[in-house]
Image (cartoon, rainbow, N blue to C red; front, side, top):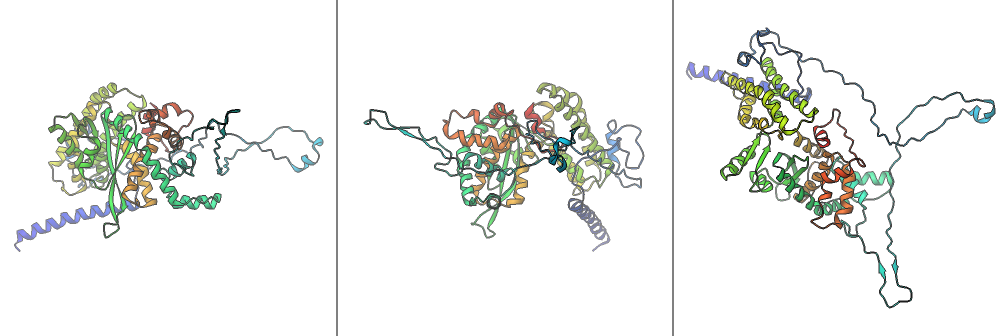
Length: 524
């Protein structure tokens, strides 16, 4: 090899080594470090030389972005994380109080010798185990007195979701909530019921009951889909789930739960055995118009281009959280430059937080974003293009973050023009979370058909929760009332409508530490 070839090869190996080193450091942080994406700094950042710039980064992004972080100045370290205050226990106001007085033995023996002058009290939160009971439904028969020739009369049997089923509505709702909200597989519930209550409920019985409930509740999901598409703004994401597949050698294949969230806070799951683009079109329909918000998966942009060619008005909104996440992963490479980018993004989120806090209407959100967020979006675009023109390794984490951001930037403008659109896709990602946590417990779907069943039950339970009502109370109402309804008389059983009537009676108490945007938006 010539000297020039050796030098080129050496430079290639040096670059490859740097990239691999970054990947190893990233993997170590994922395994052993903090996973939080939260980023705080008391000031706008120093430049990469360790000096404070003469102008703020917002005034001169190119100068800040131009530094490469390779000079010898000290890098700013993360501030210490603030300790959260200990929260007082949150208890409902209507919690019953059972009073227990502990009288000293000497007072009990001779009560006449003692005079009560006060008391000291202490409260403890207690719980009595739930109980089972048999609900026996008796329908008496009657004959007319003096007219024995007439046929007897009897109250007609009420239709039920499972014909001649042994499990009642309240127990079915508990079993399904345990499975799909609290991630208890059926075999664990089987163990729980026999060990704690002495009730033998076979796991297959529970699974069959779930299948029958889901099959009849599909009509609600179809109606929710119609309403969601009419509202025109839909957030979309997907998550992978393994399922048992006897047709393959390994015994299992990878399927996907596609998740859709609409303006009215309904969350709908669609189970498919692949991630093919056609599933998106089949679910949304050939005539879909409006706005879809998503990450950078090509299927969403492909759908937008397809609909535009067909003369349909469809826009795509990008997700700032995905853009930010990639810069967080690249922060170690050039702390000051990436820190400046994260600061501008943080300012965008502060604007969104104020809009949510004041429950700003759609048009006000659009105006505030035009005046406050648009200049920052333009500033970020200039900085990203400037950085890409410099000698940044394309395969480095910063290079990947910059190219991903620039590819999403046209769609990142959409939220500025439409006050109905969020800045990110986090609301639908929050909807995915229960299934992502659950599959760590139940590992895989038992079959492709089990995926369809799970999609229906996830849709109903998580939509009820998003609307601020107890999912178990809602599901019990659906199980007991849906069999008695006609197909054109089910709108009051949709999660949003049922929640409007029953939120005060069956509120959902969120377990999140700082609240959830989905809950606050539902309340608004």
